[in-house]
Length: 511
Image 1 (cartoon, helix red, strand yellow):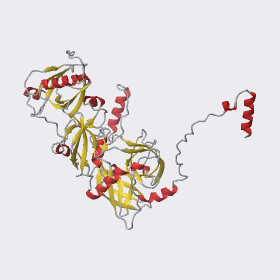
Image 2 (image 1 turned 90 degrees about the vertical axis):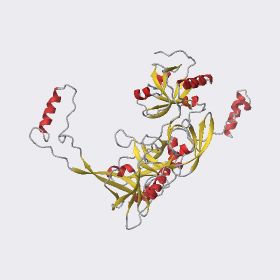
Image 3 (image 1 turned 180 degrees about the horizontal axis):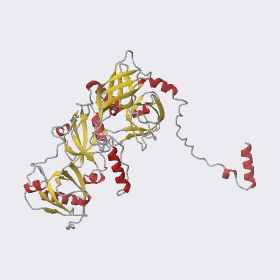
Image 4 (image 1 turned 135 degrees about the vertical axis):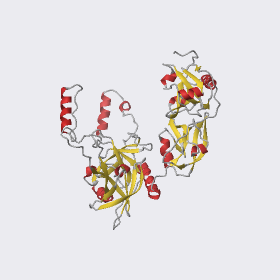
């Protein structure tokens, strides 16, 4: 009250009313987000988890290549023409085995190479999870427990694509275990703990946070890594990444590092992906991934515009495997998959992961974009073959034998497939479509990488067998005020959809 009265008194002396200087009501303060504080210590959690984390050691016999006398010191690097270059070359040749002194070249002996990694026990009977690259090519694999007990390990199953391996050890007593958690519940900023065997030092604990989720580091088609700044070094591969409840939310697999040491950018396979694969390895000895039987490409803004799709999202079908699940479901090349089994396909790389995670034999709905509208088809997934062969699109149309025709405004000359063009461009005997015979420089076709010998299979998702078919589609696209026209191109490397910019002009192109 003392502060309020003095304020009123000062107001009176200044000749203003009290109401004029009363504080204006303001909106309530927005309290900043409050995060949970860091644990006082990770010691209790580490003590509980360490016994279930193991060292995985693999050995293999290596025979050094012996393509020449290279057992001596290596030649220093000098600038071309340096006088030292010939001097060192003569000196080293005289002192290498088998050179100069009559010593015969001796074959290099076999040696035993050893690699170290980490793993964790998921079953008291002795099931151990690690990375496939930790035991790849190994003649022998052994597991060392926290109490330094060494047990010989048997490889139950391996997943090369997902980089996961399942081992089995025999012990006289039940082994300590850890459980998989739900990696989808791990949020960016959550605390995590990594335990492993860096540089062969034994059980080591590091802590950090989840830095990012869903990272694609181009290690494989199923990349969906958790990124963490918990220190991970060589030898941590295959070790677990724990949440604060002591559950495994990831398998430490890779790091980004110019020096080979940790710089705070590590990657772990999410537990939800790993536990599904581990179950399959336990049951079948190999992963059973869902398979749709398609070849896909990214939907670019140009492709989306050419097909009347509002957003550049989904995965575009560039090829169908004959007799595969997609073929049986009447999915066609040129379709864009927008949803698979109820999950949005936001980009091309999303589709392989969600298809692989789907149950083999399960019937799933597939939402497609075709002919300017959405369409839902049902498909039954098969198991992905070990070596998938994708068939090329083969529309049936009888080619005509005519001279090359200029497609106005695109910078292309094309001709129907005939025997002369098959021989000139080494095309297949049953090749269908229209062959590009010439591409003018500085034209839309040249800018998009088209070249003579490429075969146009479709235009705007319609099959073509003659230059007239292409010109008809071009005219229709211009009439519809399309900015791009979509072509399905077949070349030596496979098939690919290419969007070509359309101009209003129909005049001749340069060249």
